[in-house]
Image 1 (tube, rainbow, N blue to C red):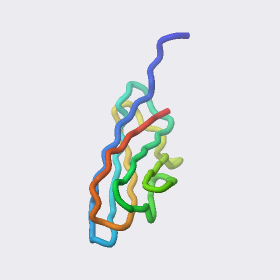
Image 2 (image 1 turned 90 degrees about the vertical axis):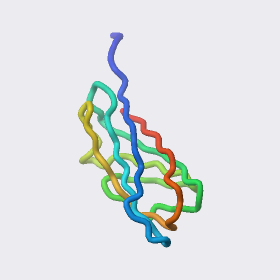
Image 3 (image 1 turned 60 degrees about the vertical axis):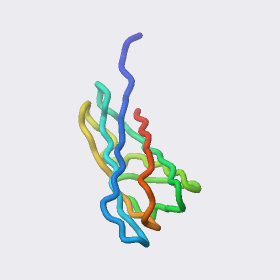
Length: 105
């Protein structure tokens, strides 16, 4: 054995629209490693009372202000240097974008 590479990813969170009572956001997941990813998971914690109301291209769980989004069946595999994205609606709007972390397998 020995050697090998560790899967790695990064994620960027961007609010695409905010109308006060709600908002839409997109998260782009990029494979920063040298091998293809089989799956990924993005986590963040909001500073306010935001809740995910719906999500597309990923599945999620939310506990309090902490959200974990995992890839959908069709976008878990990302080639080295490639990226995919998922989006969601949330409420209320007006919050600051949280810092996100990404883990890959």
